Every structure is written in structure tokens, then in C-alpha cells.
Image (tube, rainbow, N blue to C red; front, side):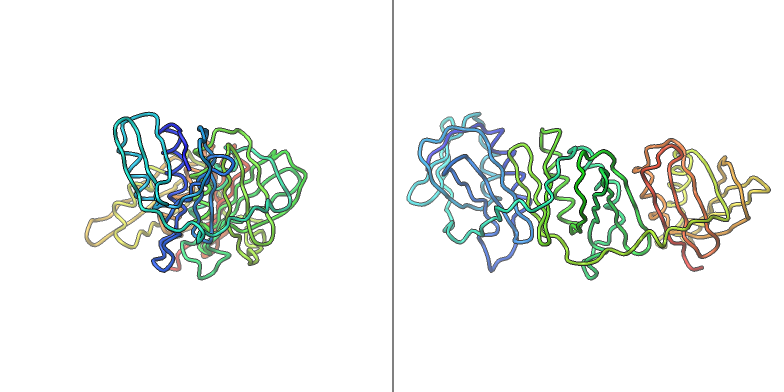
Length: 365
């Protein structure tokens, strides 16, 4: 094998694939990047649950395949000062040369490298790269970090009638983002494990194409764009019928500026201690919307903000993080807090952002 390419293109590709490498000591090949120049200059990596393939431009003098440690390769390429880099195989190992520097990296038998699925799945959909990134980022914080319940540790994506819906829940809160105009009449749904969904976002942010191709079947998701192919397993589980738990009627509503609410919660966080509890006190007749927090170690606070209020008086407690997490996903300057009563869920929406819905359960105290 012998190829010549630029440091920038090579390093960008290595940094993308390095994140997908595995860490299993029993399978050292999973910590490697496979450089395959049999047709194009392609870099591959996999951790058996997700895989990535990145093709970069360059000149191929001799075809071949070599597998080396991804971390050693990335550190080596970072340290090279020259713009042009030559990679070649020498006695089965990888020789890297650039402007007077020469490095030999010991290779691992590439025959052991797992084959990335070449199947593109079914329901091939072309959609906006930015919209997919935004959809996943708008809900990912609401997913459970644990896979004990795979349905709660995943991002649910449903495509129906030209719209894509991204949903996540950890059973304490739920976030739904509707991404309209996918440009596809295909219907389907899938569950992507949270860690793979976040890796997908990182990959998508590195791509140049405005449109990417997404396809899925019962076992995997494949996303293709800008010479990059990302493959992830999908979860074989049923996502909760979340529409049923979103209240249809509300007893109390409060409309306020999003920044005012964010600032109130920021101060409450300081005084809430480790419990991170905040009390909301909504008295429409007195036109009072107040947040209180207290900690034996720090002190206590009580702040009121201007809000348009209606309905019944209510005192209710929440976890501050669960309230604040959703605010960055709301495009509107003002938000509506819709309460369905003591001990029942709160629904938060943007006044002018009908594509995002957030539900949070109160604390039992």
C-alpha cells in the first residue's frame, strides 16, 4: 500500500473514526482504524454496535489494507508539521512520511477487522442534515443514560407524512421535537441508543452536505453523506405510547419570557443544595409567580417574575435541572407553562414554537 494525501483531510477522518473505536482488551482490533486503499482511500472503525467509514481524496500509488491503533495514528498525524503525508506499508506495518519525518507504526492483522454491513437498509430517506442534528439535540438530554430499559435509553425517531418526530424520555420527563418537511413520503420508526445518536450528531456536524441519506431496517440504521457512512444498531423494543400521558386539559397556565425563567432557575440552583428542588407558587388572582429554594448550607431564596397567569392557585415542586434542560431547545422568546394540577405533569411549550413539547413530572413532596 502507498498513498499520498493532505494532513487536514487525513486528520479530520481519523478524528471522526477514532470516536467509534472499541475499548475491549480481548479484541484489540476494535481499537484500530482500518485503512483500505483497494478502490478509494477509506478509513473504517467499529465497536461492534456502531461503525463508520470515511472516504478522503488522495493519490493511490499501490493498493492495500492495513490496520493500526487509532489513538497512536491520530497522535502521530497531529504532531506532523508538513501538509502532504505519505502512507505506505513496510513489512506489514504502516510507514508515515512527511517533510523529513518518518514514523513506523506496528500494524495488527487486518483480517480480524469486523466487516461493516454494506446493506443500506430500507426506507431510504433524504433529509436536511441540520434538521436531523437539531431534532436529536432538542430531545437527547431527556433520554436515560442507562440501557437497563433500552426504550428509555434511546432516541425514538418516527417519520410520517413528510415530518420527522424525535422523542426521548427517562420516565421523569419527556421531550418531543417535530422536524417538518423531510421531503419524504416514506413512513417508519426506529430507536437509536442514546450514545450512538450523540455520535451520529458529532459525525453530522463534520459533514458538508446539506442533505444526507437515512435508511433503516429491523437491526440497523445507516446514514450517508459527504463520503461518510455511519452505521448503528437499532433497539428492538417498543417506545412508550407517550401521547397518552400528555395532559389534554390544564388547571393553571403561566406565560413568561424564557430568559426571565432561566435566570430565576439559575439563582434557585445556587440555593437548592444537592437536592436541586425548586418550589413554584402560582397565584393567578394575586398575579404572583414565585420560585423558592432553600438549603441548610447556603440559605434560601424567593424570586418573583412577571407572568401572564390564569386558572387555579398552585404550589408544586420540581427538580431544577429537569425544568431548565428544555429551555435551550425552545426557539421562542416566551414560554407557556401549563399545569394540570398538584402531583400531575407540567407541559412547557414555546409561545411561537409549536414544534417542541416538553413534559416534566413534579416531585412528591
